[in-house]
Length: 313
Image (cartoon, rainbow, N blue to C red; front, side, top):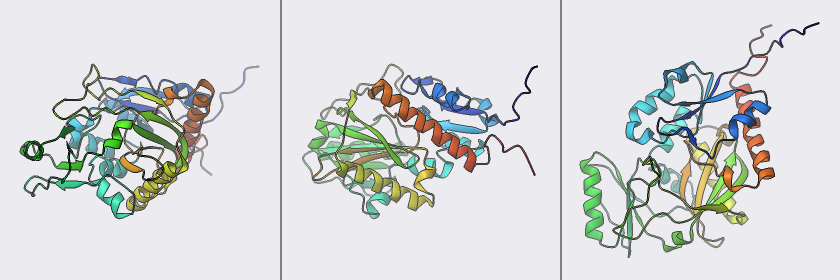
């Protein structure tokens, strides 16, 4: 006797990428299998593929060209049926002026000056200055200067291009690398090390072959709890500012530099950060990817897309 097909709803899940990297950079290669093990079926699609609008859930993973088409991308985030992380989170995190919100909540950040086009440019009084556009990813457009006049001129060029400039004193502790703290559904998952990628003044970072992001040297990490404290503080500040719970953030990466005595947040990544799965040993990676899949299942339940959601009383 043949058994009837189980009467369960199978949501259509998309891992969103970009056309230059249609299945990401390989670091997320295990996620489709981890989701399938939980009974969830996902496939990769570039974010601007019309089929994404038919998906029940879209998870941002490698949309690394969004900064070139920001308004189009942000409009798209509001048109997909369900997005993780949510559209309001993406819009806020897409502009590095979010750092000011974190600082106001007491999160220790790199001192930052923001200058929108038409606003005065205040160059930090420092031996070296970092200048970047507030909208950008993968260290594209980030430059380091030893001459404040040259830093000011670069900020002016950003203004001429319609971009807001972010100016920060260069902290030499960055040369020791950053610790990337990964959270899944608001909880500590794992961490990895990122070697410094910002070259000396006058040089530019080396980009990958697609020009999408700066090449990084990564490694394993076991951070002190003081660094994790900064990560949790950043997540709480972001969630409070956005009016959501930290568990509503499917994934987050908090980049921190410095030691336990004075850690500083450099970035909070809530859109499409690399999560460093490849820096974990095989057993740990399987467990952490399982946590990711479980969190996706929990999110589907919250969104009314669970396996029994199609049944009505």
